[in-house]
Every structure is written in structure tokens, then in C-alpha cells.
Amino acid sequence: MDGMKCVACGKTARPAKLSFQGQAIDGWKCKCGVEYFQPEQAQRILLLNQVRKEQFRVKVGKVRSNLILRIPKRIADALELKDGEEVTLRVEGSGEIRVLTG
Ligand SMILES: [Zn+2]
Image 1 (tube, rainbow, N blue to C red):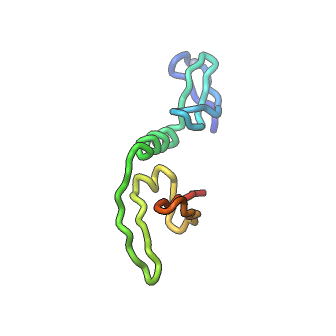
Image 2: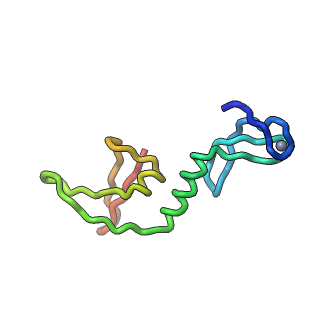
Image 3: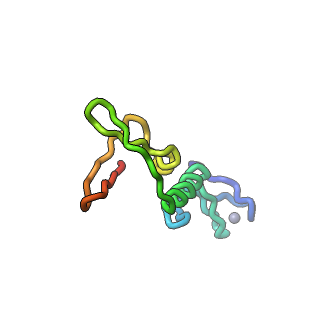
């Protein structure tokens, strides 16, 4: 990322690692103190913080002998999950499945 012109003071804001709503985010920081967040990353963090507060009811399906779960689009977008990506499943307790991405 290159520098960008600061709207507040007119100087050049430099690329920086910043924090937005408790998450690390790329952006630009100006010497005058104003921070600019990378807009796509900011949008994803907002979505992530939204879906973290929600519960999703989904139906168990079946493909051949395996059962499948559909992951709602908003969750996939928030976690940047892609078709074909591998995740790790772990059974916790007697009624909980944890899905680890990445
Ligand atoms: Zn500035």
C-alpha cells in the first residue's frame, strides 16, 4: 500500500497496522493522529462482530453416507470461508461441534 493524502491536514498518511473494534486491520496513519482503515477489511470486521452475536439454525442434510451442514453466507463472508476450503471439526462435550477455520 502506498501513502494516501490525509483529509484532515493534507499531509501524507503512511501504511500502518491498526486496530479496529478489537481486531487487527491494515490502514494508514497520519502524523496528525488521524487513522484511515482499509475499507474491505473494516466491512468484514463489522460483519464478523455482527454474526458473533447471533445464532443460526441450520438443517442437517445428507450427501451419500455423510451428513452435511450448510454455512450461512454471512458467516462464510465474515470468516472468508471459500468453497473447497478445508476446516477442522472437533466434538466437544456431548452436543457440540466446533469448526476451526484456517
Ligand atoms: Zn493528517
